[in-house]
Amino acid sequence: MLRGDTQDRLSGWCRQALRFVFPVECIACGNSLGTDPVPFFCTACWENIRPLRQPACARCDQPFVSPAATTYTPDHQCQHCQERPPAFQRAWTLFPYLPPLREAICSFKYRG
Figure 1 (tube, rainbow, N blue to C red):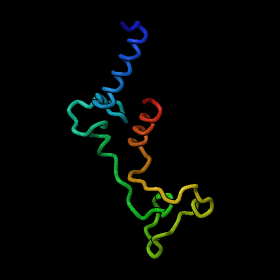
Figure 2 (spheres, rainbow, N blue to C red; figure 1 turned 45 degrees about the vertical axis):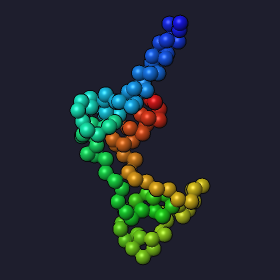
Figure 3 (cartoon, helix red, strand yellow; figure 1 turned 90 degrees about the horizontal axis):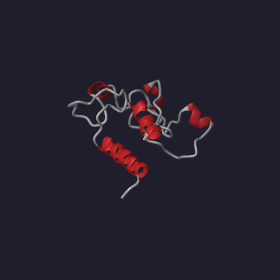
Figure 4 (cartoon, helix red, strand yellow; figure 1 turned 90 degrees about the vertical axis):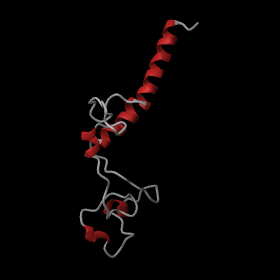
């Protein structure tokens, strides 16, 4: 038989695992998911997650302000990557690191 504190810890871990697999609230804003069809996000947050558009830096994949930046040079790097090249050769970014996605990433990263 498990002792009380061990049983409580296991119960807590199981509850967290179930909430990760079957979340009951939006990971970004905390609103109830109810019957929302998208896992992890409520409909309002999901509609605010937009994919990044090109053009972007060929190294860090951060978007350029002007589309003309890569008109003739698709391998163009942003000023930051030119001046201080990162330790990696290439990064790919699907979405900007903005709310509500930023809140979701921080929630996964720091709150389990």
